Length: 319
Image (cartoon, helix red, strand yellow):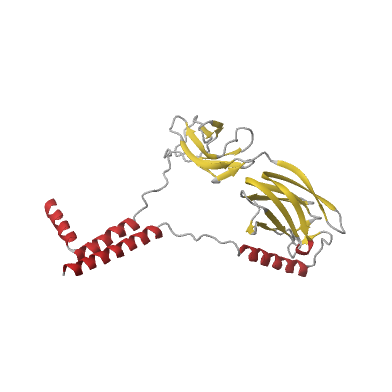
């Protein structure tokens, strides 16, 4: 029986017409099947561990969570963090809930976080084999805390406290006609800046008078602040940036010295703000994303067409 199958297979492939369809069938299986090179997770199946983000910078908080399949009374879960050189820089004990879930946090702070690269999180429950996950850490220079004075003609000088890591502030200035605060940066790494903006200098209000989101542009790209805190007198924004970033623009709906706006004015400013952001964002060219199966499918299709043309040409020559 095996010999008959082999003979049938050889006969099929000896016929040029059948060969073409056989190749088409094989490439179809390759394209539609699961990718061979998939990300391998080296984990103990009874314990899972994840980090809440793929990368962090100095000052961030890592939220580590996961599950334990079988909770054993008296067993403890140990979480360890290794730097890119496999040095243990942090370890802690974590309580596992009765449903098997656990969560703990680690603040990236201190002298141990000095090397950028891929860090490993190990989670070991009792005597079981540790489970691991990874994240990337971008090392930055020590944060700079300072105050930048902004003078507005016909008004007063406003002090803007800020904290920046990964660069330095070169200048701050306002454009009252556009209700915009601009920050010029010199960046040496991936980082972030936290600005404490006095409401008397710049604010963003909705039509009903409630706080509204600021428009934020990083080198002309519309972004959302990484974090915002609100007090009675300040709007505190934390904005992340990439190495090479030069300008950050914050657009509100009111600014000193006027610092007042009617409902209609606020509505118009919000519309203008959206237009400014849209116009500046349109100049950014994005790279289109393709489904993972498209590239191998195109390669397979091209290969089939080329082989088909070769076989047709060979058939004509044999005639």
